[in-house]
Length: 331
Ligand code: DGY
Image (tube, rainbow, N blue to C red; front, side, top):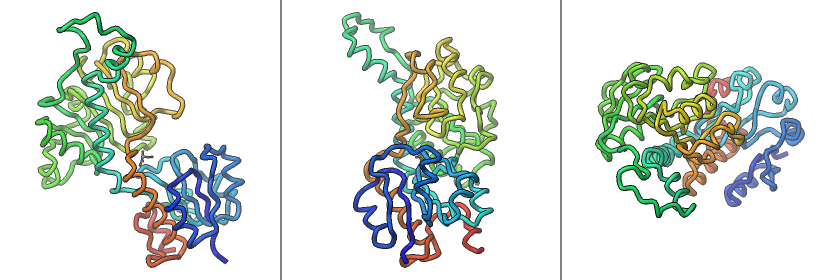
């Protein structure tokens, strides 16, 4: 009998067809976000799941779905999955690194530019019909990105791709902080200099967050950190909600502690802290860092490759390309 898999959100039809060559597939045609109870009900008897950040895969769910053997997550981040609980139960977890690096770096840069140069605020101003009040020196003036100091918190693949853009394309000085510094050759390749977190906060004209979420990273940027930044600085978060204390940030934006923020991710998204909706100097986007057609296709295709191999099918049976907990494969 062919294994059964669940696809939790709508995906590209031709990519879903590849799954049908190997599995009995149940797909969420309505593309709604299932409640935990609905997800558990849908997962009964399924050996694999193609999941997204919308679903929480935790110990309670795993215990309620004993047939589950592979959780193949669409996304490089997998903080929606309790990996330790999966590993303890012999459930393989996979993610989609690499295929989204450059697209997400493009987006981070775009969001930083939009934030520093007040692009969405300017657009709202034009749409409100307020452009008649021209002021050459004070109307929608922002802060330069070229030649400025970029601070990067987190220096994985996406951080390095942003650093290259900044140094080579925008003549920026790039400083970064990470759990550990890059090797000297890697640092030289991306033209970046390691500093401690306090220096990063103090010296960055534009600070961008690209670190993975972990309990240790919860509210890594809160009131105390924002107070250390320049009043002209911007903050861009393309990492994960919960890394920034959204309430403290809204207050800092209102009080002019920093100049502006660009946020693609939010604690508790898709809900957004109401204070962020009422401050003008913030650019808000709905978690679209990797959302180009070709990259979203590549992420879905890699997830399907992982699922097929994880459940012992296809040419790479038993060797999924991007496992998160490869030790499960040895068990
Ligand atoms: C990722 O790949 O982690 C993106 O944030 C999409 O979830």
